[in-house]
Image (cartoon, rainbow, N blue to C red; front, side):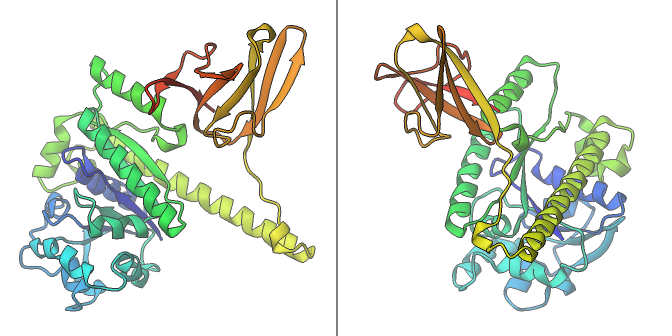
Length: 366
């Protein structure tokens, strides 16, 4: 069972719409899906046509009034069950604060249904309180819908900081994926925001799918129906169908990688190799930066080597050329060059970002 949290503290970015329609599209692909509505407003439940004011939900489970299986609404759509949200969930933050396992309670509860579902999709609340922390700690992946606005970008920046903090505190690796929503490529603003995202996040952190702007999505929500049912031939239905394919492909890829690692561990164990000496394969890429030898004494420092000049960097000199060579994993890196002791951005690299001291760092995308 894979748990995916749909999160962004900025409202109106397509978070609940994505939770509903991704869940429905996964269900249509013969996946067993549980949609967990963790927003006290209950919009995911409403978007599936469910009136929940008289129902028990997650709050009652947390308060030991009932068990998780008793609050699940079965077959709200093909392959899709729902844990509804009620207004009582707004009191869950206070309730959780008094519990010893307040950060991990949701993950412990979901273990009860891990043999019943392929996916759990969590529609997170639009805040970074204990409910969201529980969702992030339980999640195998976080999808962050980001509309084409400055406020939404600020929301994902703050959420990413929270994920990094949680990952460090609990020694976890929580991968996240940015999902551009309400995309209208006819506007210059949309194109600029997409370029901003591409320049500031690693390729593997950005979904290949864009959710296009269409009034059909709002109409579907008002109708209490996923877009795949309401307007199956619309561009948004195709977008969410492709997003479901992307999620399934990512799950299959991770499962294949994990299987390969398990086989490798077993082979190394059979050969009597101590676990501390097991080979770990990292997809390192070689980077070569070229400079004029006459430019002076040049060193390289960046976030790939702890900002220590020429740490783990080889220097090759040939005629009038000087090469700086190092190996790093694919990703986005900032760096500077040091010429005769003076730190500066790389004049050979036009891609730059502002740093905290008022200057510019050069940007390296691998």
